Length: 188
Image (cartoon, rainbow, N blue to C red; front, side, top):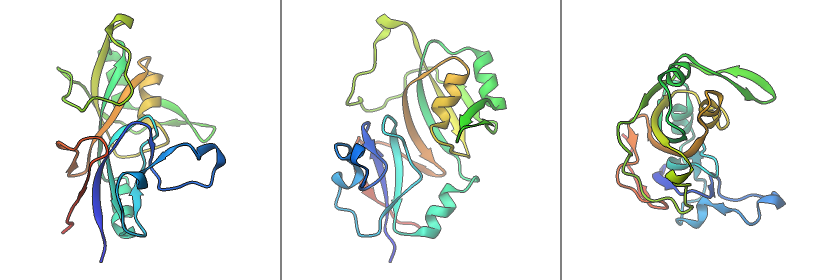
């Protein structure tokens, strides 16, 4: 019998359960949030500074299906500055980012500026306030997921990421989960 969970990964946690790396001994891991069953794995990853929806399972086939290039991942991204339509258009077409020491052209993304600040839980670490200049929010939908891709994309068009929250993976949504909250789900 396989197990399936959705989790709101909090800011500051690694998307893994343990590490033998001495540099990571003081880091926070997912296993601290819930008593997960043996053999659980994160489906995809979010970096330490990113937060939001993470799927967890003991089902390798489900994991492979979700991480395939067919499944959309949606992120709400707070940017440093008021993003321009030109920058949005560049992200929609694909931008050149660094990956594994080489340049990589991202696949076109669905990108739109959000009209209002999304209703998200407060982050554990404060983000700079408006005294340091304007910020803006965008929605980014991608089907690939290179290392820190969304952050690299926004930086490449001149608007560095201040906060990144994954809100959807395929048909699974973060809904009203709070940081650190885990919910067992059924897969049909």
